Length: 221
Image (cartoon, rainbow, N blue to C red; front, top):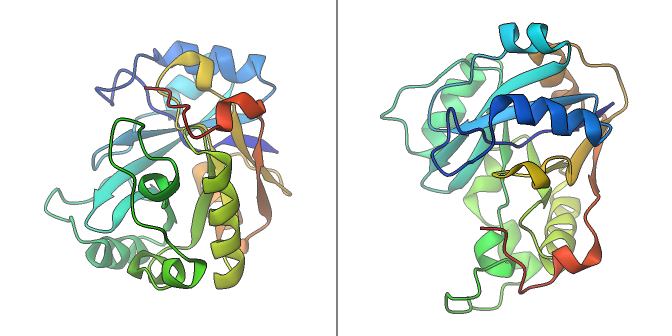
């Protein structure tokens, strides 16, 4: 089952120009079986009625900003606004039996915006010591903004740490939807199913972008 796990709409993310209807239309065009709306903030988008009206599986999640970086959260409706520490978020999500995925963890190491200074070199060993990897259930290695070196590095770190990797387009405009996906072995029909399969680890990330969109000089926004 093919799902794009990371997308933003104009309704819940100020930096997105995608109308919710465009998410579904584009997802169908790209041959997806489902799509996740993961708005910035602390609340999950209301997707059940929207999904029913469009006869397409739309799942909700949250992209949380924490002291250790951005984290995709599934299985919770919301979390308190005063939670900004990743460790506190972990405790909250665990109590709700949800899951957490480290979103684009090496963006500022290997997919840096070209107008910002280059970061210091990072080794796999150093990366494995980052605290965020002690708190998440999986790692988003394939992201629509990631360069190829970022994807390769993230896959290697994830392999060293024993994490399964996910893919998500991180779409902020319609053309990005479905460029990076997660392929699940089993059928998913609800967010509960999604959380269960993420915990089982029965999935893999797939990068569907052309090579020209993975070069270091490429930045979508």
